[in-house]
Image (tube, rainbow, N blue to C red; front, top):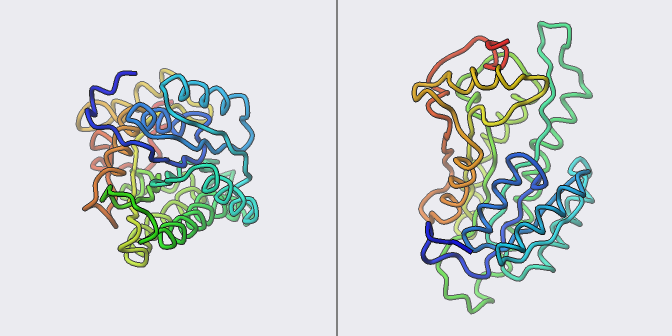
Length: 273
């Protein structure tokens, strides 16, 4: 196991990553493992991919378990956290990566519907906040009860989106849900201190989405001041950094190659078709 990028890796700390079976959540989970963390892998339907991620983390010499839960159901959210906190003794970070990303736009042939908005709000907003509350109660109850000499402050990392400060009307339900989650970062950071830090992590265009072609993604990825947006490993390394940075709370880190600095009237994926 090569941990040269972190000569003093975190020992016996656990991170819970939602949506960790695939895509960005998987890369975040793997990077935490590379840096010496044990990992609780949450998944919704992708059991095969989740078990593959578990095996890969175990091959890195870290402990990993996969947990299935439907984040649209509050009872399953509570059950998920209860199981994770029982199976891992030192849960120090929660990364809320799972989300719904479905197209709608008020002025389009696919307008926002109440059902779509409710689904996005439940998974993209309610689930992360509910899990954050459970994480806070867990840390508050542990305070003063452990002999842990590590002075690090546990954290919640909310995965957001650069478009929240570069607004366009595409993906309206998604944008509204993530905008509310962005607001929660400051609210919860104040409410959960000093037991728990809450931070936001906002990627740019990082992976292909929907029916976007590889060529379209490549063009979109270059539409930043730096000539490239974020990669999965950029986001994963930023997550580990935030989890290890005691003085950061109530802030959002934009990891997007400066994409948020270039206003656009459309979502970037529609500018490359």
